[in-house]
Image 1: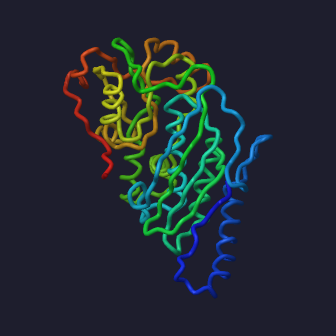
Image 2: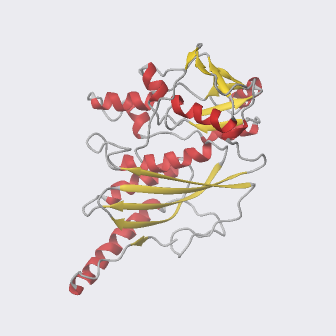
Length: 323
């Protein structure tokens, strides 16, 4: 897909159009050099044509879209602009991980006001694409009041079908791929003056999609799965709603340095919530693949009105999008 930039308004002095177009072409060329540094599989066409051409997908095809907005998903006073690009791609790729899929590519659309450092933004996009093996195959630029990055990712699920939220069954064990609250704690610490390379601050600014864990869980026959983007205090309820079941939690594992509240409602952890009837097999497959064993935190019950943590009502509480 050719990288495009929207045309100037008709009211602009025609004498300025040529110079603007040259500057625009220079910017686009530099962006393409930043995000197009991956190896292109034989037979595929990425940036450079009117649309990308990908080889046939294996198994089920997955498609998901996320939007990251500066000032909402990232505090520009505390973090560099490239972190917005990184988070936009990472959060979209995490949706593939939540289905047990592997990435095939992504297209991005950036909206920004004049003066935005587009090269810095796209360096973050390129870093996330390289680290998740999700090549950027096309994109678009347009002028806007705010900086936003829209990412559409494509993936595939070979073999077993994608793992949905709706497959949880009474008696199943609920697990998570790691302790929670690291991202929220990192944002808090950054506001307190901690440096960008602080371990928890990095967890907030550079989230890591659990792709290998998602594929392992799908291979182990997980009944249901989703990523924890808005906090387990909301996301577990969403999974239970989709599966028409309830749950009883024994614990919510809290990351070192995070508070209990941050682990429940902080959001943006992108750990995976997994439901299975064979937790032993799941943990064995994780360990065989060199992955950290998931943590069992409770079980599914038939009564969908039962939603508890240590016997107390587990309220819906987490990141709420303002719509």
